Length: 225
Image 1 (cartoon, helix red, strand yellow):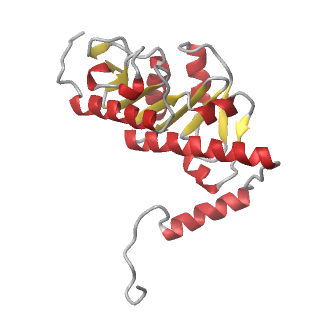
Image 2 (cartoon, helix red, strand yellow):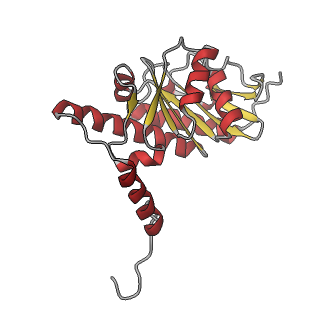
Image 3 (cartoon, rainbow, N blue to C red):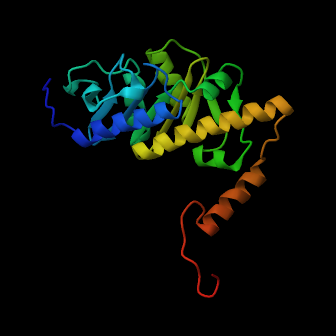
């Protein structure tokens, strides 16, 4: 191990910033949760036991894809196997795991979060719930990896949620979107049985989003101001 404070300096600071943002949004409570970002064969990941809403870059450890520490002075998160598994299997750029209130609540009662709103399509549609397993174990990592197949988000039964993305910003955005969607489902279920978008409706949304470049700013066309 080399304790090089210069390793992934920007990425370690970005992980700390992401944790503080998620904490301010109420998705990270105390030391519960973990965040990482990958650059090549190095991963900057939160240290175990750190208060995430107040995280500093010095509380972010750098490991290689085998889990060996290459920079930092603190032990990485107990969910390191999950993070590394995501990088190995799916080639993601970042991972966010939280115990966000709405996502955790739904993980205790649902077998899956159905596609009740078209924005869930940004996460791949229906969000699967990985079977319960003890935190920090290979069984938990494997069940979550299976639930993430073809998706950018998964719920973890009686535990929390995981989101992934090509960048750290996107993984954070996905975590915020998932928590919003869980809140929408909870409110809808309190009023009645939520309607679920069928495959035809989902496909129509995808086609419309592609045709309109949905989600990006666009200049006004001549004469249409």
